[in-house]
Image (cartoon, rainbow, N blue to C red; front, top):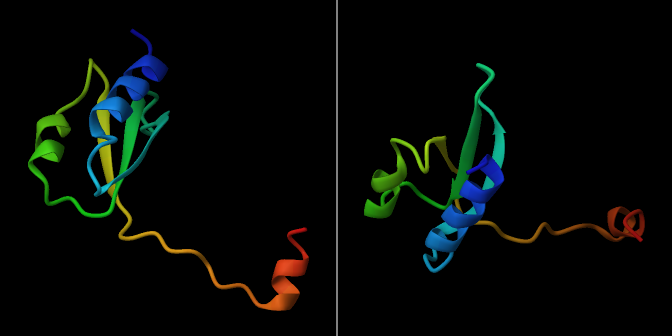
Length: 81
């Protein structure tokens, strides 16, 4: 199994939970591929079950808090069109 397949499988497992945001694939900085899991908070038993790895890949948990839309001023939003 490659890292992208592992990421898809992990996303499918975590998608039902409201604290889960996303999973990404990246390098640990030591030349190893890892799964980066973005969550609102880390206080969930399911996170502990994947903290030691998923399908042979390292898992890095990244708590980012709640996501909310950015409020842009009129001049800022005109640059986005």
